[in-house]
Image 1: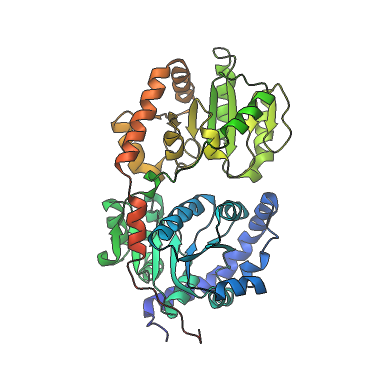
Image 2: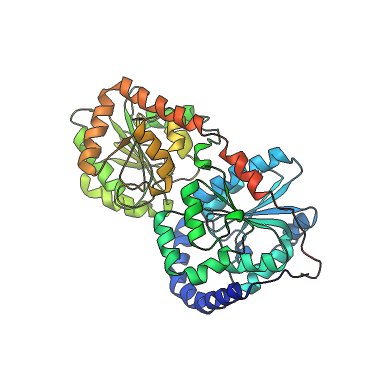
Length: 442
């Protein structure tokens, strides 16, 4: 039996479905280009249209599934963390994890056990969404960081409990405020929102979400998922092949965005006069940007090697154009720069390098991790810079001051350790509503 559907949500959905095809057509060429650059898009391509193989259908028919909906690598890593905790709570839980990008799919597939089914998200058009729900037949749906309106609405029509684990930055809030009349009714369909702090509560209430549906669970980024370091010996051997000495200092820039690789390379080139053995590792956030990164570095006359190609010595810079390895590379770094913080906004996850025992440096734009960086700034546990000049100065100081590097990493780890438990609280929140199967007719 279909659940009651509010009139304001119905109006919002009509507007969304009116504009979505036009927006989709405009964005489609760029989306296809990114798929081709990333590769791996042919596998399970039919999932995007709600089409599944007989083997897929048989697996989903065997049990009760919980559907975790994510987008790319970052959201997928969070979803995997939540999935593992859900299995710890109930070892019999079967989980379907859906992703949009091939890189996210690869990361999820590598981590998948027989209890985790990895699929691609259906395009958010009603026919595809209904087909996907008809095959997966989940007992509940959990969105990670982004809600897809048609999937949300169709799940609610089928009586499914829906939870949302959002990351609402001030920038996103301002955008939603401009379209509050459209976005608000859709968000109010969600049964539970698991948010990070009281500021998030205020933001969601301003968008019209009932306070009773919002639970403060903390920042799951503080919860280190463990792992990393298993491939240190392998990667150390690769560095030797590139001519990097065992005790050479390593500057690693993780999850970089456009423009940051060039800045780091220029900083590296300036620092080599003082640190002749210094080696630079660049890990772009999106591997399909590799040609762009190489083009940026070419005028600097640096010897650049790619992770995906056979190692050749001597080299100055290694560009890691593979996925799923960053956590292990952090263990080899002397100093770590956090990407998406200098030329872009939001920042990438700074917890993993800290938990690997490394000092972190980042730019002024860490809005997505405001709670973490605020505490680190108060406790002098990390280094924040305003521009490339300060970046060079601070990296130089850290390379010459091992006790300071150790102190920064130690204080940062202690702060992270004091905030553990958000993952458990988030899982408890999103599972707090009773699960329900869709009817056979749906």
